[in-house]
Image (cartoon, rainbow, N blue to C red; front, side, top):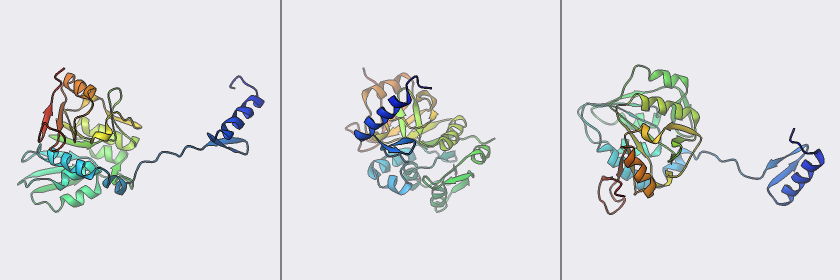
Length: 242
């Protein structure tokens, strides 16, 4: 199959085992590299919490009275929920059970939960049921969190099922805001939500590398750095000046 003898394969496996790259087993070998796992919601909640709070406040400033919006699951989008200003009338769709619970405490907010299979690691409802629940619904704005922002691969999530739901949300939103802290830039995870030019705005906590500023400027994607993220000041809209 590989164009080499069984003896050669065994010798190579023995060499890799001696080097510590893998562990020999009966009839084969397994990698010593740990399997990457998606951090739990509670783990992510404690990571860069101050930065996420700034992003959430900046995102909340984008909301308008009487709007119909979607807020995706995630720890950064939860900060949008927590910093929601008072509205007389606001309709919020979400696929996150914890977001829905927090929103119920807000007067003037109508809460709609997109059902489906509940991922315990993210509190997000996903799958075919969630996608079908979105049929016939359109949003004035969508706010989604991502785990990766890449020049080549766009906005990505570690879960294919979550990415499929968020991609459907993006298609149904008049404006899409991506909420991503600085650690997400230059990262690619397993499943694409949208290309870089598939959203309208990115809100982050500090200026990203210059190549991202340039790319967003060329694609007419608004890039906002939240208060405290740089010398530019609160809610600054960065533009490429090169």
